[in-house]
Image 1 (spheres, rainbow, N blue to C red):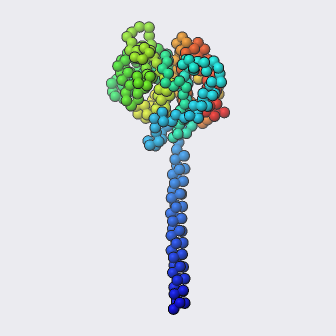
Image 2: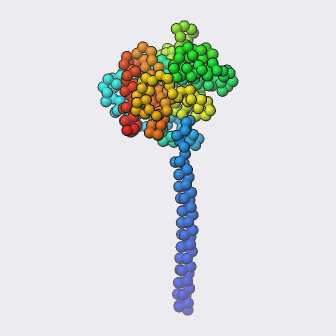
Amino acid sequence: MKFFNKRNKQKYVIAILIVLIGTFIGNSFELKSKLKKHSTYSLKKTNRDYNKLPIEIPEDKFKPLNEFKDAELTKKLEASICKNTSWKNLIDHKKMSVGVVDLSDPENPKFAAINGDEMMYAASLPKIAVLLATEDALEKHEIKLSNDIKTDMRLMISKSNNQATTRLIDLLGYEKIESVLTAPEYNFYDVEKGGGLWVGKRYAASGPTNREPLKNLSHAATVDEVCRFYYLLSYGKLISYDRSKQMLDIMENPDLHHKFVNTLNKIAPNARLFRKSGSWKNWHSDSVLVWDNDRKYILVALLENEGGEQIIRDLVSPVEKALNID
C-alpha cells in the first residue's frame, strides 16, 4: 500500500511538471509572438517617411509646441550665444530674441528660446500673417483666387514686396487679419501672453492703421509665436494640410539672400529653405525652416541694433552648435 501510494505520488508530481512545462512553453511562444509583433510595429513606426513636408505623424503624437520646451537645449543655446558679450548685452536689455525648434525627431521635437515672449517691431517678417489670412479667406470662400492674388502672395514673401503686401491687406481688411491672428485655433496674438504676431498697417506711407494695443506697434512679433507659426506649418496644421503645403511652396526658395540665408547657402547649399525676414532702420528679423538630411530645424531671431543684419548671419553657427550639428 505504501509502495502504491509512493508510485502514485511520483506519477502525480510528474503530471504536474508536464502541465507546468507545457504552460511555460505556451506562454513563451505567446510572449515571443507579442514581442515580434511589437518589434514589427516599432520598425514600421521608425521607418515612417519624415523627409516629406508637411510632416505627417500620428494625431496622438502631435502636441502644442510649448509642451516640447527643452531645458537642456535652452541651456546649450544660452551658453553658445552668450559667449559673445555683445550679444549677451543685447539679450539682457531685451534687444535680442532667439528661438529654435529641433525637428530631427518629428515625434519628439525640442524647443528653446531666449526672450521668447518679448514682443518687438519686426518690419516685414509679419507678412507671414498676411499670407495666413489670405489662405484662410480663400479656404472660406471669402475671396476668390486669381492670378493677381497668387502673384502677390509670392512677391510678398519671396521678394518682400511692399506694394503686393499692401494690395493683399486692402483686399482682406484689418478686421480679417486680426480675427485670424486672435482665433482660438491659432492664438498668434494674445494680450494675456504679452502680444505676439500682428499686422496693423499697410506697407505704405499712408492709409488707416490698426496698431496692436500693448505697445502700439504696427508690425509686431515674438520669437515664441513665429516659432509656433512655422511649427504648425511644418506639420500641416495651419488651416489644413493642403493649405499648409501651399504656404510652404510660397515660402520656399527666397529671392533675398541675406541674414540666415546668406550663411545657410554657404554651409548647407542643398538644404531647402522656407523663409521670411524683415528690416527697417535698426530693427532686423529673420525666420527660416531649414530642411535636409543633416538639418531639420526652425530658427527665428528678432533684433534692435544697427548691426542686426550681420548678427543674424553670425547666429547660425552657434545655434547649430547648440543643436549638435557639425
